[in-house]
Amino acid sequence: MKSELNAPHLHNEEAAFAYVEARLWPNGPVCPKCGTVGRAGRLRGESVRPGLWKCYACRKQFTVRVGTIFESSHVPMHIWLQAFYLMASSKKGISTRQLQRTFGGSMKTAWFLSHRIREAMKDGGTGPLGGGGSIVEADETYFGSVGGPEAKARLASLPVVGKRKRSIPAKRAVVSLVERGGRARTFHVGNASKEVVQGILRLNVAPDSVLNTDESRIYGGVIEHFADHQTIRHISGEYVRGDVTTNTVEGFFSVFKRGMRGIYQHCGERHLHRYLAEFDFRYNHRVALGIGDVARADHALRGIVGKRLTYQTARGQA
Image 1: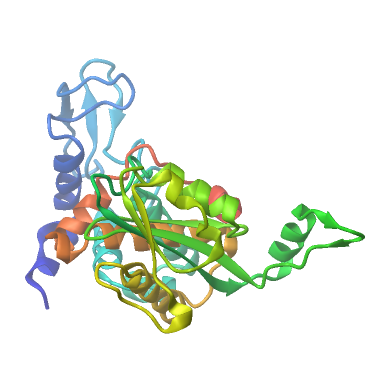
Image 2: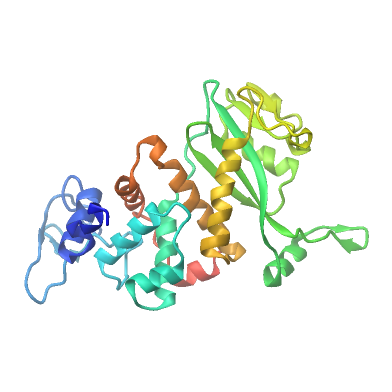
């Protein structure tokens, strides 16, 4: 067993709170009520719950959970940190059922816990990919059948052609942008049309980048917006031509699909954006960039602030 799995913060509640506080409050405890920094005292005693502080400015009590995905959670902090480590270190993810078997409790608790961690893994998509002649690979793929209420809702939103609705897409469309040697950014779209995909490219790729794609017509004319556009012709059996390839983004899709089919197996379309954020996060904090399992879990932990997610929102959010 890895030595990091024996770390005190993964097994002791007080150590777990201290671990989170050190990362979220580097300048001392921050009162979520009045915003005062460093003017709080830790409350101790047999009847006092771990991690409780009292602000000397407003006299309110608080913990580091307030204002984070941990707020109102009854799951012990050291269990949360174990879950962060498992999700961050598992290349293709870890299922809700496996989390339940590992920690105990209900399936509902394990499911909600994993979705809140995915929420923490969202990076917000700040800044464009590429730039300075860097290569960005773009590709689209189709995953998961569309059916049931989701299919009916999509049918209702489609325009009428003649006297009939357009046909329902059989698969969910996913568009991914991968900066060669850098970050990935993935999107679930209702329709991977030329207009939609090129709109994503213009918003998320720096104009002085070199774009690599396959021969799909949805990328036609995109060279107007970037330094260069190189195309690889898969239809002719071509996969690499010098620096021109989409193998990086296809490798990303390979890990994503193996995780979704082999680990998660079923994913409602309204939750797909969170799973994409999870796979993006692990790719963007991978070992090839010098980030190990512990550091990756810490990066995810720093994303917990201001991302409160309720169970009702997680169940119903599109």
